[in-house]
Amino acid sequence: MGFKCGIVGLPNVGKSTLFNALTASKNAEAANFPFCTIDPNIGIVDVVDDRLDKLAKLSKSKKKIYTNITFVDIAGLVKGASKGEGLGNKFLSHIREVDAIIHLVRCFESDKITHVNSKINPIEDLETIQTEIILSDIDVIQKKLEKSKKKLLSEKEIKTLEEKLSQLNQENDIQIKDEKENKFLSSIGLLSIKPKIIVCNIDDKNLAKGNSFTQSIKSKYTNEKIVTICADIEDQIMGLDKNERESFMREIGLNKTGLNLLIKEGYDLLGLNTFFTSGPEESRAWTVKRNTPAPKAASVIHTDFEKNFIRAETVTCEDFIKFGSAEKCKEKGKLRIEGKDYLVKDGDVLYFRVNP
Image (cartoon, rainbow, N blue to C red; front, side):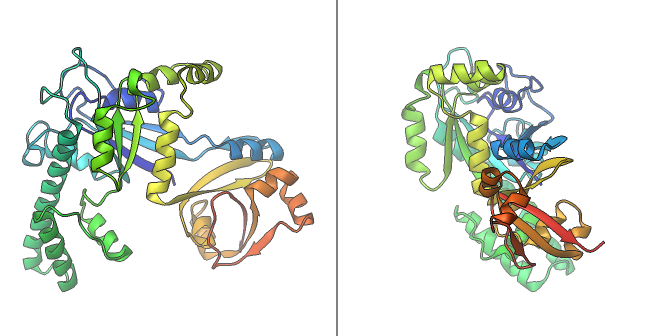
């Protein structure tokens, strides 16, 4: 599994430019008028991992397959979207399909690019988006509670929804008690419980140190993941070949691309790990949730592997690269035999043994 990230924000904040940069494409039209994007643009990007590159080289693999991330460029939300303003609920429904949300806010001044509210105020922009998401969730919960009269919900589910509705009406964040409750609330399509990253789109002059807009966001949203990028610079970087890209980044003092930053924060936000399989035919990266038991991890390769699981032969990526192969690791006492209770770690190189 990879993960799907939706880019949301007000019109003309740079969503399509960022999408084009992240996906190294020109699929999303970028123009100076609201609702330039109507249907969501979707791009699948390889999560390039130098660990996999090294494993594939050592194993002399015929194929190398990275895991991936899907970006969805969702049209601009405006005040009143939950009531059908702008392009309304159509776009709120697109957000329901993603695992995490990138809240993109404009943190730069420009006479050439209009702002839907005629002023640059990223805090206000974020509050507008969050309000529309909350109003949408209130509407979803109220409709579900209406259906409860037809005995379609259990008493516990009704109590949970009433509790969450009260929290939203008091402008509080939804408090989730456990994974079971989270699964139920996710199943009905609540948006405000989705993990999110705030991305500040800044001009190139202030990229290194930020500006008053980015400082205000960091001061207010102290518990949120915040990434600062320049969508225009990212678009330029992704248009270069590898050598030119590295040279240009050194020249402007940029250590990581916005794509790398977002992947890192996204994996951390969603609690994801990467494990590897490697051999002569193929070396491949796989994504699973942290603390995934070995049989469940095996199921991402093939569903039958979970029920037919016997054991996992496990080597750390570092040891594999150090000694050159799983066989050498075994000779050095670095290969472990793990059973059904083993929780897969980030960077594990795994060989699953299953019943035929």
